[in-house]
Image (cartoon, rainbow, N blue to C red; front, side, top):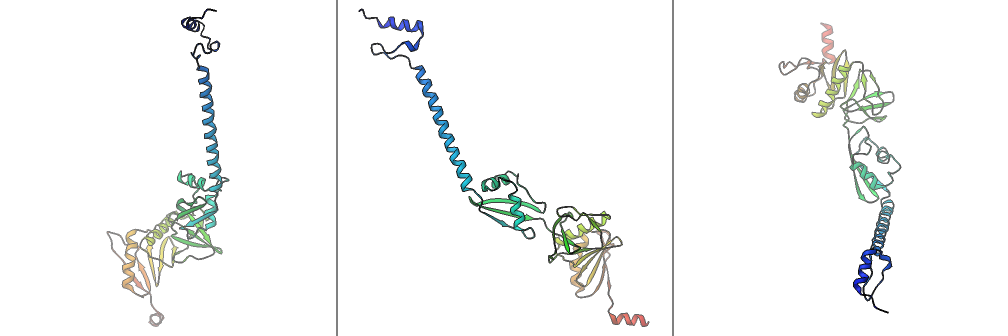
Length: 285
């Protein structure tokens, strides 16, 4: 049988383009395009399987390793640890430390109204630390058997039967809406704003009166043996003068009249309180 020339075979291949019908001929290999396609597909599924398995392992480790076992709370004084723990674990996914850390990093975590800031860090994969900064309490008022504590904006940040030392009590003003995390309201809004201003300034100058009294539309501060009458307006200039004047008065008792004090009118008078002997003499006269 006559042997076909290689060039004739190649011409038939070019004319027919039927790759499957050609094998090897005299040492020449047939085209392998379909094999390459199969190989590319198998490589894709292999990479997909490895990636999927790797992600599954990482997910499993994240669930097991970052399961919350301890929450450490720092910086709180009147908020309880329980309140803050409930705050950071307020949904079903918050059993995972990584989830808690992520939502506070993205500013998506809950923050109680009594807190200025919350910072969450991980001391270990299962150990969450929550550092908080509470809003500053500037005063309180009695309501039945409880004390209502409020910040500079009149927001009720804490309620307790216990008395927190170093805070002035507010008296003589009827308040509404004293629920926790609600802003208190008064029918005399201007006087209430003045009291909030006074409380803020007193905190600034580290003055701690026994109480702040509202009477006949005027504001009075009771500091040691002296009643400071501020009138119906409170300014930083008035509060700034209290400490140096109190140092000069020493242990004297009486009323310090600052109703008309201002930058343009520096009028301050002290009305000394008469003791019992002086009162008897005045009555005899």
